Amino acid sequence: MTELKTPYYLLDERLLRSNLSLIKDVAERGGVEVILAFKAYALWKTFPIFREYISNTTASSVYEARLALEQFGSHAHTYSPAYEDDTFQETMRCSSHITFNSISQLEHFMPYVMEWNSDKGKSGECQRISCGIRINPEHSHIETDMYNPTAPGTRFGVIAEDLERHADSVLDKIEGFHCHCHCESSAEDLVDNLIYIKKKFGKWFSRIKWLNLGGGHLMTRKDYNVELLVKTLQELRSEYPHLHIIIEPGSAFAWQTGPLVSSVVDIVENQGIRTAILNVSFTCHMPDCLEMPYWPKVQGAETIEDAEGEISCKDDYRDKDGRITGYCYRLGGNSCLSGDFMSSWIFDHELRIGEEIVLEDMNHYTTVKTCMFNGIHHPSIVLKHLDGRREILRQFQYEDYLNRMD
Image (cartoon, rainbow, N blue to C red; front, side, top):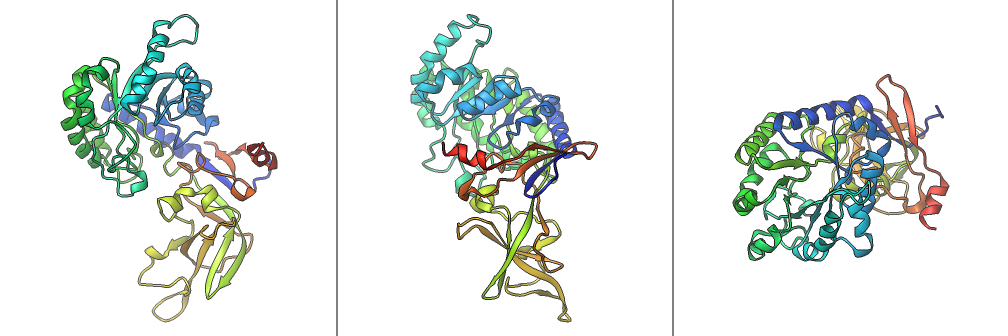
């Protein structure tokens, strides 16, 4: 194997398979289909592992739909806020399910789907497409507005009041509802949200064949109530036995499956605040840390929030006798963005240039959202196999940056 140098994302196959086993068990006991959402995880070289546990995926664009068909080996469950005329034919080629975000999109593109379905079988790759519409229950437990698809004025989905006015014309054309109102949410949240979904849209369930409950079901988190999830899904299936229930988590598949490994390249101090500058960037390689925001766990360190008592990042951490027991640092990204840093972590030693800094749980919503702002060296992607062997799945070079501008 080529020498492994930082920075790199490390994916642990053992941890990935553990998540996949749990997800498969939920699907089998709950009587539902669980599919992978590419928007959270799309490392296609690992798809052969996924195919041992699940059969389908969900796409949010024509490129993701192509990835589903050409790399995962099955047609995608596709949803997009808005399809476009010049790419819709390709979307149909790669999709088994297409969900429309609005009634106007449904009315515009449904003739294309009807023609496609009437011609199915004319070529070996032409499959029938099942259409649905996204519904908005106007209720969610998501606290961060950026991630809340049911917030007032949202651009996502049709509310019950609007569907009521167009019910017959819409329901004559579709076979399913798609509802996404979770984000790293609990089983208890699902129980509550289902009350609103059924109250607002349940009267039309008899006219559809499938119900997609979207993503955000973080069933692989340690404190997640898996048994409540299974029970809830079983009861839903019992109440509506004709419905095929689908859920499409993203984070749950890659949750806690590996870190981003970086190195300290410099240590600077300004007005008593020490910043360890890393050879990675929060804005480029860990964007959700700044967007959501959240503090990632750093191996061998604790955040100021976790420290006992109050402490300024200008101070070292001392015990009751005044002895230094920890050293406080900001972690800074290696980009020109002033805000490309996070504060602050306490280490049990003074950091050194060249020392590795391991940022935990960096496989979901990271590799799919990274960018090459400033042309910073992009982290490699490494798979740790069950036997401990580390395989570099992808390394990035200058040409990758160059070709993005071509």
